[in-house]
Image (cartoon, rainbow, N blue to C red; front, side, top):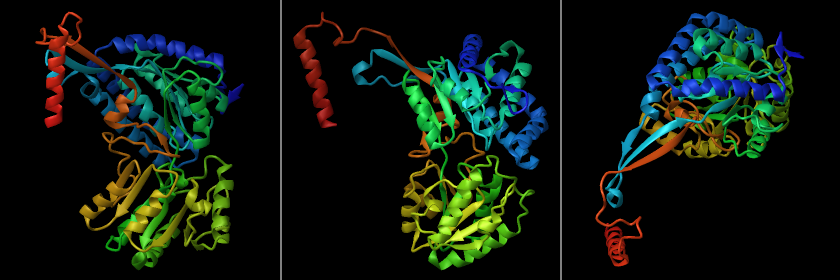
Length: 479
């Protein structure tokens, strides 16, 4: 069997064999010094940069996105791989931690060890950038990886694994790619018996995440899940409306709206709502679908987009631009809706198409309330000329990442963690948290001298122990 063009549909047995190969390669990788892994990953990064056009072409051919979008995706991938490689030693290396008064006779240190083999199940909307947020950080932490790309983008996964083997021939099996339908990913998660992975990093829908979580639960395999979003933009009365409209249109229509942290909802205070809608419509109308963005990669997503738009209009919304007639395959026209009831699917469910809802609110308090009412809590943005007020609003929002006066400002900052809660999943990739997500903390204590009162010995007189405990109690009761 094949999937796509000349890509095998790997079985559960194939997956277990790939995990075994990765584990074997991972032993020598984990045994390297941190600086040696750093040098190797930077060598791979340079090789990826040299092949950026090749990767962009494969991404574009499999997803349908314009090549310029695919090249930007490759660049983001390089930025994150570079950061992970250069910072793993600092973040995960052994360090001294305070012992405290009670254990002053102990020297305490903390370090992190690799987990072993990480199973990564990737999406189709950003088939290189998104999974590499797990793959690159997992490798930097000293692990091996088995990567199952989406069945829509198997070529990206196969090329990625091959590129590592060619750049690092001594570690050719460190990154394994297994391709196939959903059953291949299920096998990697353990749905058909233990696959042997030590952790799974999944990106996809909440429904699929629940199935992956159930499979992982059978063997208590930890799971990191990123399951999409329904990101909101909050626009204050003093906002630069031109800048806000420009960012909203890019965040909502870029990649045909197929961005987990893309803009799907906008809450603007009533005094600027009409002016903002006018600016958004003007910019969205100027886009040329097929050039500015490509088609829906998953054709069945059209049904979801159509349902959301049609139901919103039935529920009383106004189509400021586009509407059902604009939703014609293969490339959908942009749709701007306003006055959409908060219980309509276009507000409550992930649309994943070039559609944006722009609703008025009384004030920013209501904007925060509506933004946080969603079951998703991945990203958000705030537009205001008062930066301090913007930061204060960001701190009130429940989203995992918030941008002030931009959208997706965090995507190209590798030191920032990324992830959400609720229907958006759990766990974090990127940044220091992303490195630690693929490592296990190991605490080590070394006894430096005998304490005045040894509380861990039966040889210590009971009265002496009692006095020491009472002294400690008094100190904590006072301070």
